[in-house]
Amino acid sequence: VLSGDECTLNTSGATATFANANVGTNISVSITGYTLTGANSGNYSIVQPNSTTANITNATIGGSIIQNGTLTYTGSALTPSVTSSLTSVNSQTITVTYSTEQNGTYNSDLPTYTNANTNGYTLYYKANASNHNEKSGSITIIVNKASAPSAPTANTNLTYTGSAQALVNAGANSVTWYYSTTTALTGSNYTSSGSTAIPTGTNAGSYTVYYYTPGNDNYN
Image (cartoon, rainbow, N blue to C red):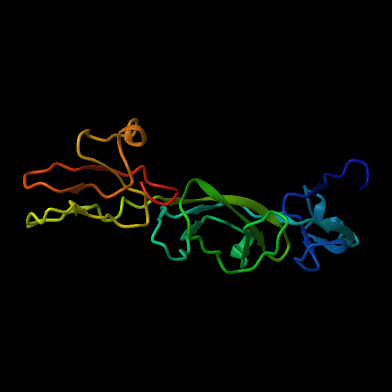
């Protein structure tokens, strides 16, 4: 620019465009949009810069995956429901795989769980999308205990025979039941005051049978 001329390089409209959008190194970048401003700018011409190179690095997958509600023990294999809030640049497809072991084999199918675990099973996942770093994380899968199964029932309409007769029909055998004809059973005394034997009666009369189950790993 000659001395005294008013001519300024304007870079406000300049753009740099990668040759492609994929992750890579030394990708060709073209630069355009440089202009001249000022009273004497019409006396000058501008040559756009030569192309250069630059790198495109992996984007980050955002969000997470959580269990949708909880499961309750049924005795059968249960598949958890999960909710994903994972996000990617330009909504690229995200593929999620799961494993019950952090360093185990991952696949697209959610594993199943049969037994209750109120502390939660750890389910690991990996999320992948083109031009993104792999995202890994874990979900806590809760399987609640089921309610206590069918309780013992009174053996009604017994008639004196001179022999001992069972006073109740046993409760569901998926848990252990304790019985007593003298003491109300609770979580603190069922082993000392109760018995797993079905109570019996011989003489005619009215009997009260107390029962209690402490549950087990799958039942309250």
